[in-house]
Length: 247
Image 1: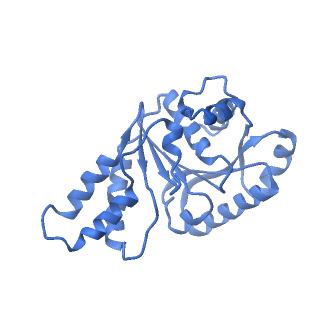
Image 2: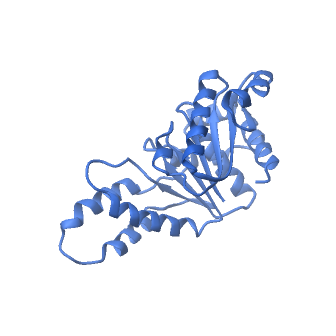
């Protein structure tokens, strides 16, 4: 299953993505490939691993080498470098996409990368993608062939309206072949969120994740989310949300 996590900045979507990886590992639903598709890469820190390189840097390097003398075929070299860029964790691997495209023509390199990334992803039981904040990734069709897309919001009208715009664009671009739903994060007023969130966002409400002091403490100490204890309120709520949809 390919699970994508989207949402505006500041909603805690990367923390939600890390909680999903944690749940899948603890349910022995592995191997899991965690993909950090946000140029402001933070997923590795929340998972406790660091990638040696990013796909964006590899793409730039391949583009610079296009005029070099013939040697190892470009496709083979890129495949090796993509495999080498994958950081290994316990029950999961991490792939960092890195920065976006600069000036120049990336068509041929991107075509090779799409094929390689599809091949890499097929080796995993689940793929969890932490997308960049906002809607830019949708216009570039980063989320093609997503089975479950979670739009993360906070419990504010502004955040929920942003979630609504993301869902509309996803529907227009037809980037999700499975289910799309709303996760409201850092909830303090559950009554308001249960009454209003789905209507404001125009999405099925899949779960409410409470403000969790344990997560705040882990983030202050730069501790990986994967090591959260089972009594974590956020982890429990995320587990209930996924259990309700059979994941």
